[in-house]
Image (cartoon, rainbow, N blue to C red; front, side):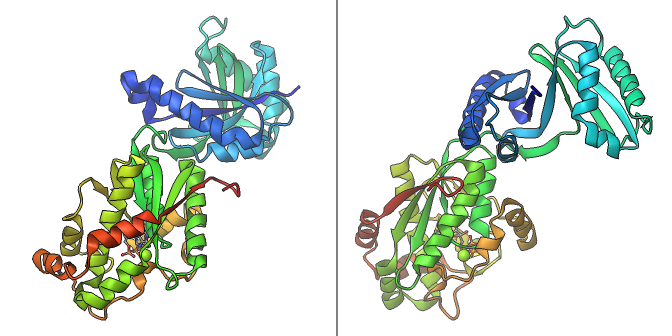
Length: 395
Ligand code: ATP
Ligand code: MG
């Protein structure tokens, strides 16, 4: 049987000294979970590489490979053909496994890594032998060690010998679950899903809170957020989503607070509500999609007024990003097409005609006293609803 495996090259994880084992263990757990739908695989780490071996012929290698491309902590990944650890067999495997690539290339070179020091040939010897064999099998090929069309990799390890072409770039970052738990404030917009993805990339396990204001915001708007989180979960793994209804609070603010301060007051209440959810869910930080100067509520002064109620770190990974940079990531991770669907967000209803772009804290604090904040928050949080979001259609 033609045996094929997937190799994951680990990145920064390798630099973590004593924590390295713990990081690897989390990564392996994450990979196992993500491959469940693709069939039975054995997953284990050795020498900064994770080996993924299908356990039977039913394993879906294409799906497994796709999933591996979305696991944080992986810098590069590739499928590889496995050969018996015998020079002749390795040559034959390289010629057959990489046939299409070898036919398409005009120039090539062979790179060898031998971590099994008991194997009776050195890396240069193996490379010369495999290179010579491939030249015999594919007479159109020329060797070019500086800029080859194709690099044939041969890795001789304890477990076997593997041949592969160039590896694909992985998702980077560090494994989700090694960076604590964070609560992302998720809207249906472009920014917050990207912010969530960026923090997951830094190892943060995500919980999400979404504020809805029915009937001003629709069921479709809510469903849009679910679909956005599902996309993010392809990278971040399972995400618990808490939905909090802010209708009453927003109506009260609209009716009782100074109009030009509505937005900043609402945002302060959102932060307070989020903080309460974060405490209940064991999250150590909040995450938002704010970007400096993008809208009236995202000026330095407005952010200062919002942050004045913060009692935990608020991560804003997009604070220095341009819209075009955010769009680029959104397109890459598949959230863009969903984000641009036109549904109302609770932040865009009842918006004042002239919001204060430089609100002053004591006016904001005075202005919001007109509503009974604690009671309204308690009511909203008491009716919060939770669900779990998983990749694919399973949630
Ligand atoms: P986004 O693209 O994420 O919607 P935005 O540029 O539209 O951001 P705002 O609407 O001012 O900016 O929202 C700023 C941040 O506040 C969002 O990135 C998000 O983190 C949070 N936020 C906004 N609306 C909601 C909501 N309905 N539920 C939860 N969080 C929200
Ligand atoms: Mg928005």
